[in-house]
Length: 302
Length: 269
Image 1 (tube, each protein chain N blue to C red):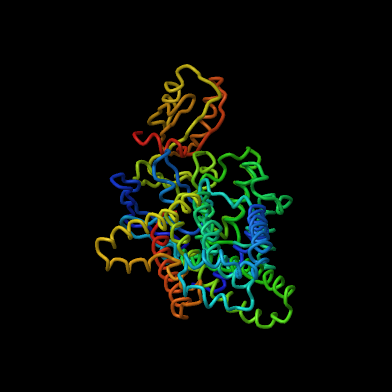
Image 2: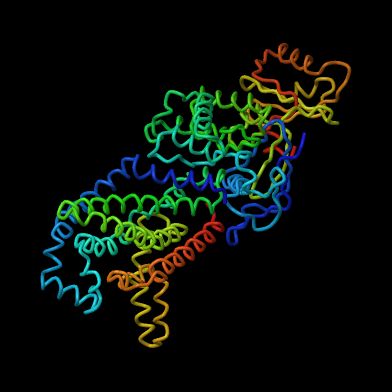
């Protein structure tokens, strides 16, 4: 693994408003990285800084050993900026071919590449249409296609699945997952379960301040957790769970969801837990090994 | 700046004019205007230049010696064409070139572009594209005028052809600072319409302010060199030297483009 992005002391101010406050992080090649946070937390600001659309008030930002916005990154870093649209007056294939040509491809290869990326997002049949003739979801997929031109090393997708129907959102997730071997994706989304499924590293921004989380199960930690989601509300769940051997602490993270902290031993705790559910007649919906990403981000106090 | 990317961006501008519905509408409007110009003032150039009323009118604008050289051209159509084109093309290009980057900026399309081309390449590429468009339109009108002139008197064809190449060069260079001004205004205007308003304010308001200032301090009159088209009156009568006709607008265009590039390079998109 090598470092593709490194930010140190990154600050962005708009007048007296601090959009990003002394943010430092590193992103390595590999699994997609999630960028999460509430509206106005600074996600789009960070995206814009990474793409070179805006400039930092202070701090250092290096992408593949070049400063953000450098011409060295052309063809290596691409993005789907939030709300950016293609020109409505030109056909999609014409615009994508133009972008591919700017990335250094010959006209013939640029056209082939445009057809390839449109195929990836399932839009080969609308290649000759203009963006204004397409639905919102299709336009979004076309802009995702433009971000995949030339197999870049880094692709940043800001709210890529927002506005897509569940089938196409799933296709985009599968596409990201299948391409993440050769490309490092940075994804911003409000759908935490989507990010949890796709990403390893999670950058959480809130009020311009960054914290990092791991979306994967925390194997090897001193404390062990299981998150149990039940199908419906049952009485005295916490008390029953607390009586299980090895359990140290139980709390309800949200309605029908319990986080159980336990001590690891020779006996498999998850089997004991499932037995308990069966005995009590509880229907469970999901058993998560560790914390859910949502709990990591929103229940720091626990 | 990468020459290939620059050429690609410039070429894309040509497509914008000739292959999009909006661009074609602009071309049709342009063609109708020029059909009328060619049909009447240019078509009746010989009688027009012979008319005492017109001569008096022209003299009142350009002065007694102003157009004397122009009136000696045997290619009367070209003389009338020159006067009309010299003043109409700069005005026309303020409208035609009003949306060089601002529309893409508002739509977010510029965000796709800046991941593939430097901001300088975008500014200069789009400028070159607009120059190419104006050059094509100028050539069309010049050849139409040549056709009319040759129809009236075929013996003038050869001399008119050489004069046309000279006029073409002068006109292309003349419109350059106007296009560059729109490139500059595009870097901070929030719409193409506002860019046109800024241009009108710059010419109208700027001239009024400069007039008032130079009335108090006559030395400030020299500041009028900042306005594109400063040399047009002298060029109209073919009284301007090469330095004023070619060198001066080129310098103006270069200064405006550098300004545009500097502002654009620092702006958030």
